Length: 208
Image (cartoon, rainbow, N blue to C red; front, side, top):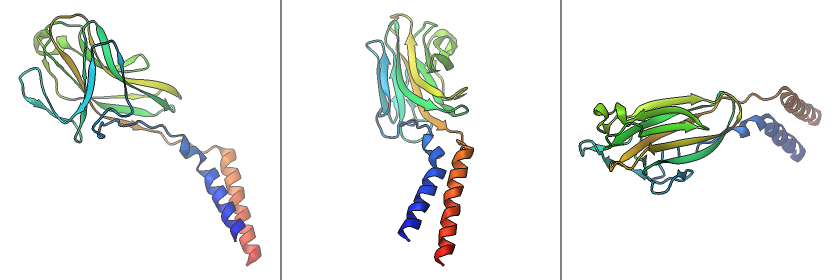
């Protein structure tokens, strides 16, 4: 009986080998209440935090998460980009999606919030789009991107400020989700697993 159980365990392990390779996005919705899983990068002077709400720069009203309790705020610094970064190993067809917004008191175009994946800008919003280039707030906007091939990608959520104009620009980010495509079990693995299960059936019948 002990040998049969060992064979069953081996067969199940082989048949589930493909499931272990799935990608993981850590703390994509910031519901830990902090920035676990993310690294702050870019130039000096910027900052980031997970918050439950924030007073927006446009009219002093409160801005809230798109989903859940927390969202990330990335505050820019003059003449540089500031961003939260996370490295992901993806399969072709895996989809990343989320929500983003820009809040600014700047009067200059060329300052923007963005979502960038390995150098490919998949979403951005410039200050010039806000209330006639005099700052403002845009409500949550959805974005999504699909991995064109298997590989390692860097997801960056950030803000870029071109010059020191005395204004403030912040990017808001929330509910970043990874939807992984099912990884098919290779034919040889299925055959090996099926062989184990067949052997288990034969041994069971033999002992009966």
